[in-house]
Amino acid sequence: MKGIKLFTAAVLGLAMIACSNPKKMAEQAENVNVVCQPETLEVVAGKVDVKIDVTYPADYFLPDVYLKVTPVVVYEGGEFKLDELTYQGEKVQDNFKVVPTAGGTVSENLSFAFQPGMEKCYLELRGVVSKGKQSVDLPSKKAADGCNVTYMLVKKCGKVDYKADNYQEVLFENPEAQILYTIGSADVRGSQLTAKNVKDFQAALKEAKENERKTVTGVDIVAYASPDGGEDLNAKLSDKRSGSANKVFGKVVKDKEVAAGEVRSIGQDWEGFKELVAGSDIEDKDLIIRVLEMYSDPAVREQEIKNMSAVYKTLAKKILPELRRARFIATVENKNFTAEELATLVDENIDVLDEEALLRAAANKEKDADKVAIYRKAVEKFASARAQYNLAVALFKSGDKAAAKAELDKCAKDADVNNLYGVLALTDDDIDGAAGFFAASGNATSKKNSAVVDILKGNYSSAASKLSGEKGFNAALAAVLAGNYSAAEQALCCDCADKCPKCAYLAAVIAARQGKADEVKAQLEKVAANAELAARAAKDIEFAKFN
Image 1 (cartoon, rainbow, N blue to C red):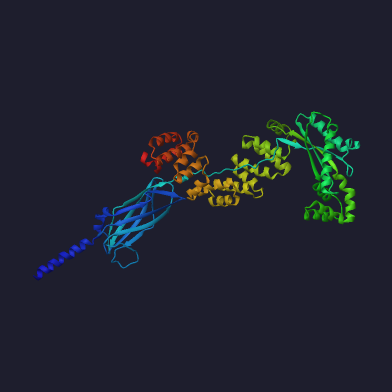
Image 2: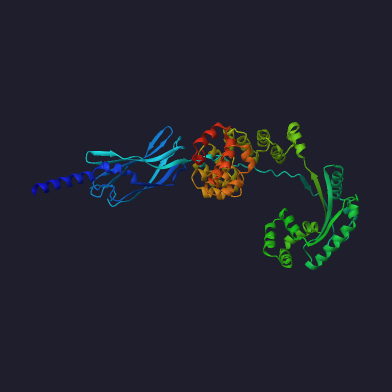
């Protein structure tokens, strides 16, 4: 009996040893379930973040063992090992995560930096279970495929605006003459019709008629009364003066082809009064202007000014007579240089052009490189701040970044300047610098340009929002990354995909995400001639289901 008991105890001991043998875990490793989120690894802002859930069945994880797991990214050109993870059975006295014998799920958040070559890769878990001096390698568990690098298609560029010119295709001139009346009178004196200012006015009209670039479109008649003597009285007097001035219009404007325009009566000329006082040498002119600003009632104004008796005598002598008048105000349209004339003058007589004409002449040039010399001339001749900035833009768009930055450094900071600095930073892969410049700019163009920064930093919904409704590659890419494929198709027009291999590539991505196999094939055929994109397509996880 005693022998039987000893034999039974030995058998049970061997069974316990067998059950706690790490080899058991290797043999039953297929029962361990691994779930990865996302299933396909995605690179965001240069990093891959992934959550892994490992579920161990009941009676699998031995109570007295350690399990060391190494996540490994396997890719063309090598492999990248992440930090080792250690777990322990429930009877182990240590400080690692415990996996109970009854089973359970262990979750880990992993992160690693993308390296070239990882476009075609997979993530696997390699485990080693150990007990004392005994250790056993577990079969590797594949967790995920990857990596998706679609965001890296972004074009690191941005829109840069030229500053507008103020060139006027039609210049307006307003030569005028005036006739003066005596106090309380609306009669036009003959001497007024032969005064120098009337003769100068008539000469200006004659010159305009003889100049093929000029056209007199009309002459307005405006009559006034000086602000003394009562508002009602002066209103009637002003009306009479407008009538008498209108009657002598034909004598002042002898050319019957010049049309009479509007005839107006202003009444008391307080605005003219203020203007003449401000431009005079009257000692108390500041006090008079303050009175005008303090009181709006004409009667009060007049009385307050009359209360300054000494001053009022000067006003009555020097100022008020000039306000008893009627004005003949002509409108003359002067056609400025046409685009063709500007182009000729740039080549043959550039010095006759003013700042605005130079800016317009440069704007008319189709090639940015052809704008440079004109902007330099405007900077040299007029120290034009707009031309200085536009020179930087023209150099940048012509491909000379170093020269563009050198000229931009001469500009005072404003929204346009900061935007160009931001675009320059983008092209130099200085993403944080670009973000800072775009934020400092704050204009509509820089806001759209900052969408590129959003894409590079993984803020896809923000990028898509900023580029909503826009056409172009980056607008389409932002919509793809935000999951809005309809918007992506609208942003990426068919013509773009037909002419640009990179656009065709993105069109293939859009089709792939919608399961359109024939469209994927058709777009990738357009890419085949581009060696770089063709090589990328062969490895791109976006097309894995279609290869």
